Length: 587
Image 1: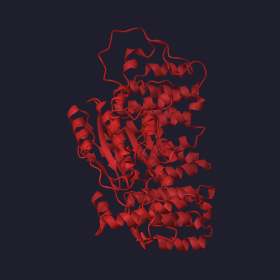
Image 2 (image 1 turned 180 degrees about the vertical axis):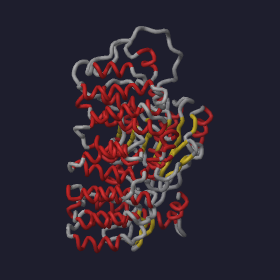
Image 3 (image 1 turned 45 degrees about the horizontal axis):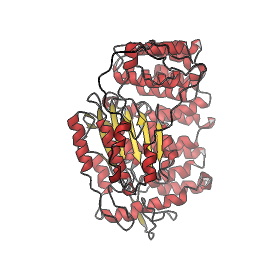
Image 4 (image 1 turned 30 degrees about the vertical axis):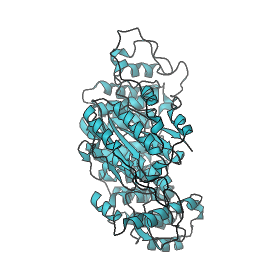
């Protein structure tokens, strides 16, 4: 599949494709950001005629454009057409299916659509269709059909479809969820392996959605059972980490305890400070390692760095921006339940001196070669090197770089152990990157081309110890045991590309220009069009796809935005995770 995608990107004249095609669509983006959906025709007839033309087009962009125009009519016949089109074989088939489900769900969520949604999902009962089931069940549940969702969560044979039903119930804030969770939590204790991982992590996410009932017996019963999983030998370290992340978000505090005792105390004493020693010696020191990147701190053992190396990263970095990027992010606020600071532990008794620790990131940051840091690329490289040096051999990592294409660096062809030797190999590879000369449109220099943010994030969810995993990565059991649990993203601009770019005829409102510099060119009849994650619809469908990728994986996503990247886009990406966070620097 990867080779097929690469083949679509290559051609007899790669340079002209990049200048004319890729450039064109980005320039059009500037005009279309102000275009509301109300400007699309609500007349089903013309929209269907347009759809029938678009759906035959070679590019995912144009096929998606046709579907969006058709769905915007909100005519029931349009929903039936989208439902029927799901059965066809597309290229790329998996991504096309995700988009069809999301496009339809964004326009058809009323009670009249419920029978179609139920019929649609039941026709495709495999784990790989979990996103369709989730979108369908959200609509069914919000229209009075919650009992059907509870039935799926209880009786369906497929693990991921049961979990999708629970996710939909949590998103819809079902009144009956907590009593049901008590039964789920009891059942989780009898499971092992992937069943324990998915159901325990889905259950704790559901519990967090009911945090407004903290302090009630109804909340305490399932919470106690889920907390007890931290002491169970069949609970994997990654699931303990996910449980701790959600418990901290729910109960408060500033520590990720991976033992049960402190969480039991906070559950029974909401809003009160944790007494000295109540966390236990193990509780105080059992936190997972905390990698840091550009001032953002996470907690995880398998870290994917997703780094923008598009040509705009050659933009100069000002002295003001250098000072701004050094500032720590504002302190995060936990849930407010009254009383003392939730989960804050009283001062501990003095202990024997600890072994000398590694220098703190702030100290090392001051030693960075700031006089040699002149552009955004230099900033990204130096902070990445700083973060890598802070990892321990108990952790593993990979570095994914993206421009027009996204790829793993040669020194991290999968998640590799953070040994000094591996880290040094990655640092040498980073130092060996030599930017290219400026071009007419890209006056500061070149690195890897356009901004394929989706491709970088997609690979962060596909990466495993042995390389990139298979398609339908979001329900691939190997991803839970071998995939990343923490993702750092650094980007400086809004997306201008994705993995499904291909040449196609332009519409009258598609202008030719350079996607990175936004310099206009003379219009061309045929342009290189990214899919909806890299042009026109990226603000909606890119974060939507991150929600899909992380629906079950429960990775933490930390985003750093430099320059012109839209804060709203990064916020929506980070919000698709537990403990997500965004730091913005510059314009």
